[in-house]
Image 1 (cartoon, one colour):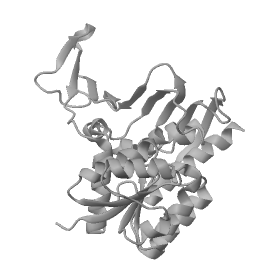
Image 2 (cartoon, one colour; image 1 turned 45 degrees about the vertical axis):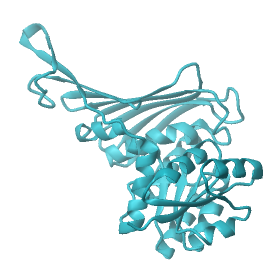
Image 3 (cartoon, one colour; image 1 turned 135 degrees about the vertical axis):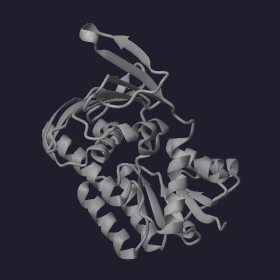
Length: 319
């Protein structure tokens, strides 16, 4: 199998992980990395036995594809340069600083006939994958994405940093236009909102109540889906639980816990097996497979743009 020649642009927290995983993939040939921080770049390059490129164009000239993991403000410019240089691109979320830049990037990729994928890694989380078959026609969704403050991502609001993960997942599951947005947020430690809550109403009738915070004392990544006849809880740390009333929702497995209620009603509750897998590795493998086959990525440039449009709409509603 021919390896895809790939480079990493940006060697911060996430870029380092991209380089680490790519250096070990049989389907990838990590050509090198580029970063404006020369010392950091050379340190990471030495760690993964690859080349440090002082000039971005030199790296692009030797690659078939690149991962753009630089600050959000540089996404559009760097990704566009890569596409023009004949490279396929996986750009970290959000796709760009604003919708106009995101649209331009999508158009550039379409014109150049290059794969453009956006790094919404939670879409590849094994827990979400295990829950996906049970998420048809949700009526209500609740999510909490809370992190301890680490300073990363503070160049954008918590809406574009954290909440956008859940926006993309909700859009993927519901597949219906948003008809109303009601949001609130607070600036606590940075120059932009650090905690936000949004209530979205969809044309389908579904309501989603989403909370994100980057200033919490503990980490939490959970979504709760209320579908006809059942509850589906997703813990992105690797757990999926389902509860349903007998005769409604899903057929329970034989090992389901059984709770008897008055009037002879029975609630069944069980856990869905979740495979152990690295979501970022799955994302990178999907990107490489799309390059090989020409298939549209699960998180295409258009999907990433849709999530950014909703994030921008939420932030605009705050003013």
